[in-house]
Figure 1: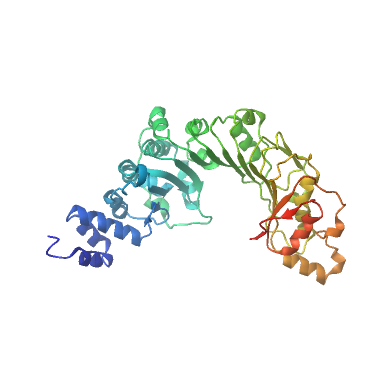
Figure 2: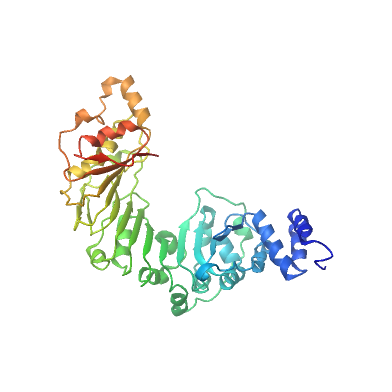
Length: 429
């Protein structure tokens, strides 16, 4: 078909309403139509999302057929713009990675990928018991572009299910690549997000050291099953350029940072420690765990800690305390305890010598309005969130406070505890 005989715009309009078989036939006519029609069909399926700055391949869910996935071979590389900046992000689940290994590998090899994300969905967990697939997953990593700056392995949405997935699954097996080829492909990484339980389930434990001992990574996020698992991982971590650390523990236990980790990561500037507890009786039991933090610019920690110690607070600009229970029951005494914990952690910690531009930040539990309404209807409850219940102790030297809240009334909880000069940037959820 000559383009001058039939306008390209008309062909693309026809392609927009065509079936997959029609798209495949159009892709076989010429190179230009191959690129345009493949992209058009993948956009309709939500696999390809093309923006001004980034083209995203989102091969998650489905399951998509082999013919559909084969269209990824026909995607033209996104033209590099200023300074040859990488512009493609790939997000793919375990099923499609292991079923269409050759197509995924070709996609990574022929495009400039700056981010690769492997998602493990709920219905894929029964597939993870095949330890022979570790070679295939490592093979994918070894084919990443030298431009790749970000890698992520995480869990997908909860309760996601695709019927008869095991019957559809035809995995592709390959031998494990050499460690040197994986290190070379991952040499330019600056950001790593890793779910350690999923990493173990995928039989990738042997390659953990490649990511935990990386000379260029500056941002590292780690999800672990328990606090002890997180502390063991940190004890074996050596990322000398690390600046941003984020830790999440699934069973809501409190992490402490190993001394060996703090000594070997002097560039660390930002820490986020996630520990949100479930609404049950054990969550309100007192704990003795204190957190010791190095010299930082900012830190975010749970109010469940008994207190905090900072080795050198002179460079600290923001310390964010969030409620250890995000959604407490408003009609229960536990709501008051969750609220009080935000200031109790300060009162149980050593006085900080902070700069004049330091800010103490707080994220309050939600549903305060319901809690206050309940207390008003039942005065016998005697809510202990009110300022009258505080002892008069104050935290000196903190001149700025930032509040994340769903009711302006929550300001009163910290106003009497902190001898603050101003409340800046009061925000709502």
